[in-house]
Structures are given as structure tokens and as C-alpha cells.
Image (cartoon, rainbow, N blue to C red; front, side, top):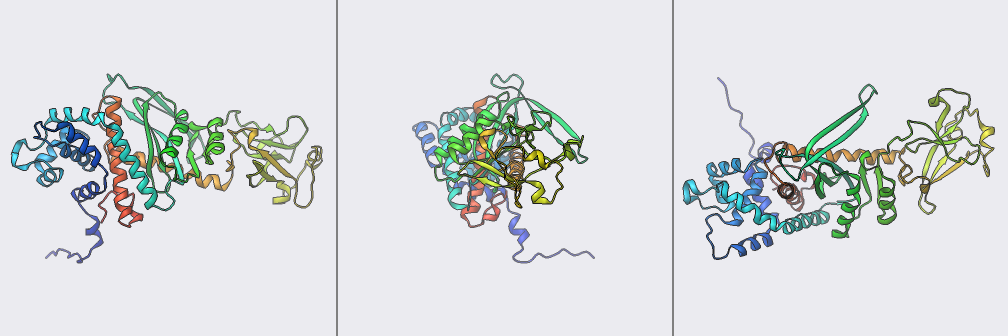
Length: 439
């Protein structure tokens, strides 16, 4: 005879297994949409109100929470889910006519598009509330571009785009992968620790990523002057010396951005005017040519020990690898050919100014543990993008036109932020990335 297990009265599993209705209720409680609803309702004053505008707005949010990619699917959900219908504010006594038909949605979207600034203001207010509620929110940021495919090839505002991915597989073999798509590109800035969006922009797919970096960061600082941004992590698509210099010089933000190899791995002399042993790689690693007779570059050069960034001087400080690591140096005499070289027990000290090449030399040294640790946070963008696709339905959408795509993306990000605010303001900071109800 089989028996059914009896859960405990306060089973944690049952508490977490909450419905989307509960999550939507909490979201509606924290979302600052009063001005938008008041504006929409004032425009309809004196007209028929079979489908209240506030109810349509709440239903649109519900469509994101319930994961409906199409409005037709949302209307079917409303028609069979009386609890959701009432929560949104529709009249269940209208029976089959209670859920909004397609033509109602087609008229509602232009109204929302006219008030896009109010929706953007909600996004900014939620970011500000998270800044207050979450310790260190906004300190470490990450940015990346995301492909948003067009619903139709006839979309006149969409364009062709591609993105090149390079790296090494598990066996150390280099690979290159090119992603192509027709549609748009979402430029997304997130908090890399909490994995929550703080700014975004939608462009055509053909638009490059790097030119959007500074406008997004400058806009973020203008809207949120109390946001203490320390670092911004990004992949090689943002490898631009001018941008890196502006981030640090103008905003005090350390750029944690990968550097492209533009010289095929060839080492360059640090001081071309004098005979010396100090070289640097295309990615900024400073090395000493300790064995001039070794034909293999990997064995001929040794990386200097990084000793830190000297903020007042604007220089990276390095120490002789022979003195630091006990390396046997075969080229000590050539090292002393350089002017003003003093070599004691501590070993030779080499300073490299950031101005030597702002693309290669960064205030957080590209080949330091600090850079590697901070740069790894960039992968948080990929996880946020996965949530946008899988949870909020952007792997399969039915929106045509840039303004509508941006609106729907903005609503999805509002749900993401609103859910985080609900958890944070409920004192459950560890759950801000959770997709279940805050309680």
C-alpha cells in the first residue's frame, strides 16, 4: 500500500513554490506607475471605458510575468483565468467579452508609445530605489550588446548585424564564431554583482557597440549622480583607447576591457630610442628579454612582477623578474645599457605611463589578478540576457518596429527591476535575482 508524504506545516519548498499571481501582486505594489495611469486615464475622460487603460497596462505586465510572447496568448490566459482578470482590473461580469480582443491592444500600444518618457522614468526610479536598498549597487558595472531578431524581414527599421566571438576551447585551440542576424541590438548596462539592469539603449543591428559606451555611462551618471561607479567590464568589442581614457580621466571609472592583439603576438620595445631588455606584448604585458639567444619567444621573455598602479604619477610599476622570482638572467649587461638604471637587491624598477598607449595600459593592469577577477564579472551580462530570452520571451516575439520593440523590452526590464525592488525592500537582499514572489 502506497502512502502520500505529508509536508511540514512550514515547508520551505511550499513557501517558495508561489504562483505568478502572487508575484504579479507584489510587482504591482512596488511599481511607480501612478503618473502613467493617471495620464492615460485623463486622455480617455468622457469616453467609453469597456477596457480600462489601467487594466490593460497591468495585463501587459502580467504577460511578461506569465511568459506570454504574444498578446493573443495573454488574452487567452485572461479569458480562462478569472483571478488574473480581476487582479488586472477587467470586469468579469462581461463574460466572453471581459478579456481584451486584438483591436483593443492595437489601439492601446500607440497610447503607450506617446508616453515612453514616463515608462523610462519608472525604470530610473526603480534603479534609484535599488541604489538605496542594496549595498554597493552600481559600483561594478558590465556592458554588452545583445542581438534582438526582427519578427519580420520586412521590418523597415531593422538592419543586418553580426558579432565576432573569439576565444580558446578546452584544448587551448583558438576558435572564431560569427553570429549574424536581422533586427536590432540591445545595449545593456547592468550591475555585475546583483545582475540587474541600470541602463539600456536599442539601436539597429548594424550599430557598433563601442560608440554607445560613453553616452550610456554619462547618461547614467547624470540621472543617478549618487551612484558610485568604480569599474566597467566589457569584452573586446569595446576596446577603444579614447573611451578607456575618458572613463578614467573624466569619470574616475576603471575600464576592465579586454585588449585585442593587433600585432600578431609580436613584442614591442618599451623604449625604441635606447637599447634595452624591456618589451611589452600587444595586450600590455611588460616583459624582460632575459635570454637573448633563446629562439623561442615564450622562453626568451619573462614577465616583470607587477607592483601596482601609482595614481599620482599615472604609471604602472613593475619589478625585475630575476630579483622578484630568482630567475637566472642571461642579459643583465644589456639591461644596464639603458640610461638611469639602478639595480640593487630589489632589482630594476620599470614604470610605464598610461599615456604610452591608453588602449593597452590601464589603471587596473590587464595582466593582474585584480583585472582578471573584475573582468570575470562581465559574464553577468550573459546571464541577464538569458533571462530576457528565456523568462521574458525574447527568443520568440511578435513585435515589429523599433519603437514597439523598445517599449516591450522596457516593460520586460521594468518587471525584472520591480521584482528585485520587491525583494530588496522586503529585506531579502539574497533573493533579488529570484523570479518568485517576495514575501
